[in-house]
Image (tube, rainbow, N blue to C red):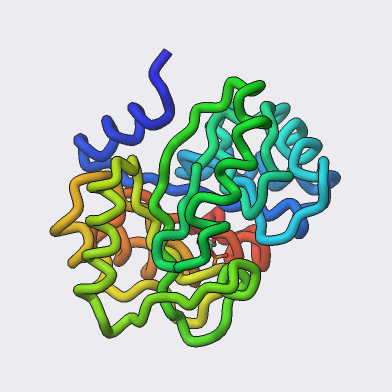
Length: 239
Ligand code: 1GP
């Protein structure tokens, strides 16, 4: 069976556009999962991401189990902390917050995760996670106690992404933060795409079909959307 990462690489080589719908366990009622996932199944969603900044123990496990009952779409953990690791998902983004300088989010949490991960069959996908300033303080900034990179210093963002690639990371994720006022700019996406040779994920503050199409046109291989679906499930009809 092809791995999720290999499938992403194949899609990228064919120029296919990938869409991940982010489900935050803190915001999704279990009873709402069947109807939400049935809309997701009828859309062009390619991946389900599950994760949040602050989620209580076991909640992710129960949610992923329920989602799995209703879809064959790959479920990828996008964890804010080690308590969101569950074997019921298919893969995990092993995120290192390379925009920040908090050792806990660069390597500390990862060491703590190993005892959990070694008992799972999760596919582990090393991901360089880059938080970019977006007009207001986001949960990622608050929880990780790191500062996002300035939108104006594009060279610094490109160099950070390139350093992630040189470190052997498999994906770069440009993150404006959930509910961001300003999504990652066109210049940033295009500049990173031009310099980096691994698949590029972009998320945060993307709320319209036009923004989604623009992000692909600028070079995003995968776009992540959470808030727009949380606020209005009929957004599935437009994608
Ligand atoms: C957040 O990039 C994701 O980590 C999605 O952001 O909720 O703003 O779509 P939104």
